[in-house]
Image (cartoon, rainbow, N blue to C red; front, side, top):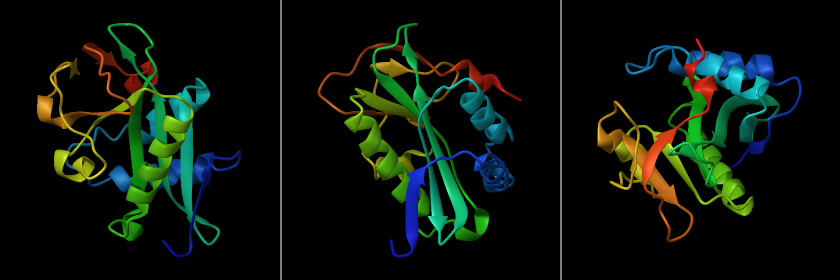
Length: 168
């Protein structure tokens, strides 16, 4: 994508990330409006394995976070994608997709075993995510909890996100 730069989150990005995340989820039907607080809590806990921003020129327009998840209470090298946010006036331009692809590549390069997320099956299916009966997330319709293994082994069990996802 011409004119787009993806880089690691850097000191000083925090306020703009909060603004972008808040704006991106403002009118989302299924949003709890806590996504910016989740990103802040993940950062404060040092829990983001990968935190990327997208810039158009020098303007930060998007952010994605990846953090470790546990399966049946154990860290087995899997991560969760989210939140991912693109400033509303830049949505639909492929920026979120570019961030997700770069983040997944970085996770895999770090030796992660796979990634999970809660989201729209139609959107996230393009990246290879799909619902799998092996991994479950409580109190959510199965089709919205999706899995992308980086190898052939998919563990069985119940997934839990970092405690920061309870931020308000």
